[in-house]
Length: 213
Figure (cartoon, rainbow, N blue to C red):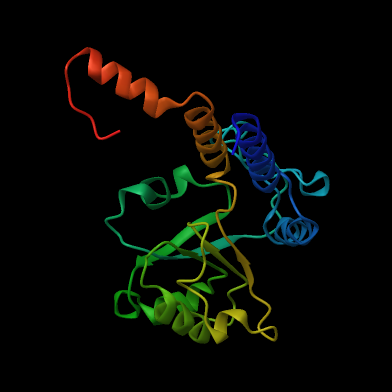
């Protein structure tokens, strides 16, 4: 493969990656509108197809009309430091959002207390959440929205979650890695276009170090 053809192929790869990363699709727009109707649209413009990303989101900007309370069950590790902002309490959350309980297994939840609180949101981040989530959906028909902290959702799918009759809205963290993936793609393009292995090999030879290149 000539250098010109290789560079053209890499350019097509980066364009494709950027399109996938940053171009929203129509079904996602419809899903976002539904969530906006349920819980209010913070820091987003679902009609224009604009979604959260790290470049233009404003930390703790919860401006927007509150449509409904979010009473949240966290199906996650109570010791997970990545969820600290969620666990700290109501001061870190938008108005009318409240974490009811945190746990990674059914046994860690006070079921009677939760039934009285009528939860409507489940936040999922624990890797072994499929069975506990299915059980929570059976116990709490009031749940309208399940959100996975990860981009992948294969670890939580179940008949209970995907039941059309149940009508639960499922969202994930799609987009949170888009910028990083785009940056990685550009780095890979430069790696081959500038023949970085050759540069590293030359550098190592100059300082007298054997290389694997």
